[in-house]
Length: 72
Image 1 (tube, rainbow, N blue to C red):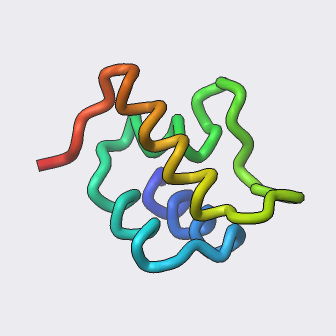
Image 2: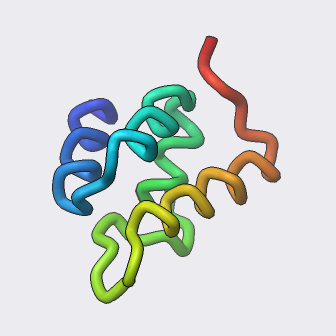
């Protein structure tokens, strides 16, 4: 289930509350893109990055440019 994957993504990357809230407000297609589970260039584990939260927020912004919508 993608929601279980989201929980694991948050835990493994030690994401803060603000980033978690942003992820929880997205629909499945955007979340899977941000997590790197759509076959794109993003990776699930954010190893070797200084600020994982900034990376995820950037991915969210970039996914939004591609037509990703917020979940209502």
